[in-house]
Image (cartoon, rainbow, N blue to C red):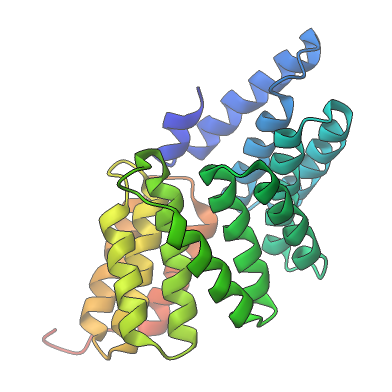
Length: 252
């Protein structure tokens, strides 16, 4: 499995494992897991900052899913394509995310719901449709229960990070803090990206609350988690945030 490498942030190693698996599938003609593999390769490329490769791989996934005809394949490919389009800021991102979300609802499981909600919320956020994004998050987080669904902790955490950011945009600092705190609680111990995302969300809340020293501490915490990983896109985002804080005051 490629998951341990991906969870701890060894994305270059995860990419190598996934591409070997894909090549084996192509040689052997085993298509059953091909769309899943292509979707994982696309997600890996986004996290490494290679969005062009992510889109190209996602498009291959969509074509493969059309051949297999399986609903789960169609969702995974549509979700990968939507993620790639959101990452590039493409104007087609919203429509692609709506298609992925519709397939997630057709599947009906918590994993598909979390992933479909996440990408559609991000697409809505990009174009300023905050009402739709907020309603989607409220609906999903109303049914996803980390206590009853322990394997969904990382997925729920990502949605709480999104909700924290959305609430901040709307000026709801107290609500944003609740979501950021919940994200910190849910973060799986070994999951590098989840830990950094939760810390960044909490840092953004601290900044909005006027607590710059706490924001700096949390940003440094996120960077410490990310420094040994290949999460280039997320690391760059945290670095931009840290730079926006400026230098600490003397004696702090």
